[in-house]
Amino acid sequence: MTTRRTDPRGFSYDTEYNKLQEKTRWTEPLVTLRNGQQVRYETRCIYDGAGNKVMERRSNIDLDGGLPANAWIDRSRSYDDVNNLLSERIEVDDNDANDLVSRNAYDRNDDPAVTQKPEGNREFVIYDERRLRLKSFYGVAPRPSSSGRFCLAASGEIRTTCFSWLIKNSPAARISKR
Image (tube, rainbow, N blue to C red; front, side):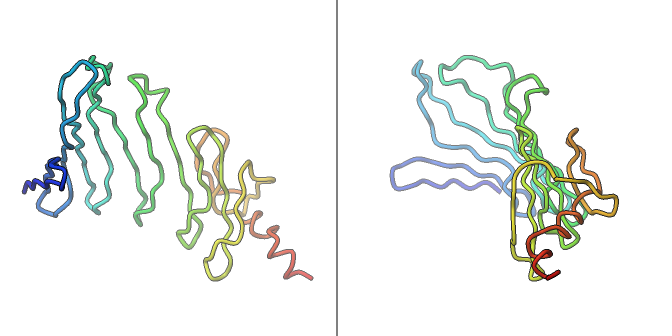
């Protein structure tokens, strides 16, 4: 099914949906480039069986109307069995080594525990018994423990270490030991 929406200023937006009412393709209003050419940016999406958006492609149109190295800018995502976002890759140019990759790890309650940003920085989050955010910090885990749950290794791999050490040594745990 395709729909066209026109806003009060007269700009038209076209959207295509699949049989599950998921947006699969949409185009934005006409824009004029520096060379005078008029174009419409287009975005396409692919979903997995659970309805998660696993690929989004946006047309790569140069401001001057030149042809870039790749015609589409891709953004892909991967999910675990319970639909938690595990990783996201954003294409920057035609060299895969320059892609921006974010990774996530979750605790036993499926709350995000570790997030590795594209530049390598990591954010760790500790939750209280009500699953409310208790503490978050950036950097590297102080000391890994073999009895832990999740941690991101320096290589970017998700490993099952160091998370329980963070919980045992959190400020809330130290207060409860008094």
